[in-house]
Amino acid sequence: MPFSNALKSKLAKQDIIYGILNSVPSPVICEMFAYAGFDFAVIDTEHVLISDETLAHCIRAADCSGLTLLVRVPDDAPLTIAKVLDAGAAGILVSRVSSLEMVKNAIKASKYPPISTRGITGGSNTGFGTLAIDQANDETLVCLMIEDAAGMASRPEIVALDHVDMILESALDLSLSLGYGTQVNHPAVQAQIHKMAQICRDNNIAFCAIPRTPEQQVSWHQKGTQAFLLGEDRGMIFKHFKQQLEALKNTK
Image (cartoon, rainbow, N blue to C red; front, side, top):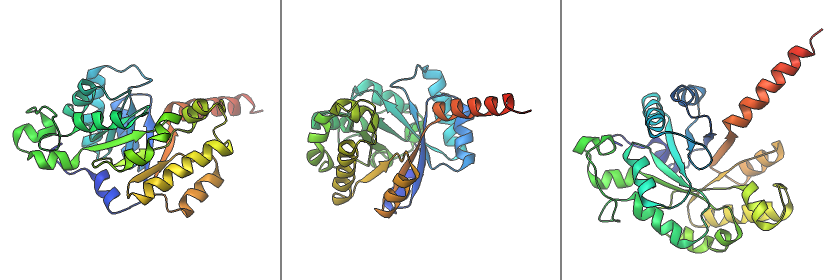
């Protein structure tokens, strides 16, 4: 990344930021997110099949349109993390974080020496050799999704690590892990999410909420939450198409 990371700057200033999960990978859609006013998007490579070429085009489109693009990776595999960062992604979002060791591995794969042991390349992410390594380390975001009971138990140790920039909630997977099925608004599930948000606040780490009701949106704002994820584009597109079709069918 030869330029400064706008999202990292906004997090440092404690600006309110808004993002979206991209499950319909397309450079055009990444540009749409930028012009719609989103601060960041997370392109999903955990649940979505996407070629390296498409991912590279999405990263470039986001970069050219001023959108900070994170890549959601399925685990802490160093080769996967290094490849998406070498392609120019502004950072990673590690899914299914269940242990302190996973986070250490992700940081190790994301940061160059002297912080860690990431291998260097002469590509665009280092300005083709013109960007100082310490600047590249500063600008690369490491974000996490803690989605199960084991990960929740490791929260105090995880937030104590250096180089963790933001933690996102994942109510659905957490609910399944805790035995509440798909009851994302179950009091026990929400209690764990709010506890995670408080731990982040206590350790000066950004927490990203995913409000599912207007009441949750208001509550998170009142608690001083800094980051919000609107949801997943695929589900929004489906609902919009279905509503528009039903409206047309019902027109008399």
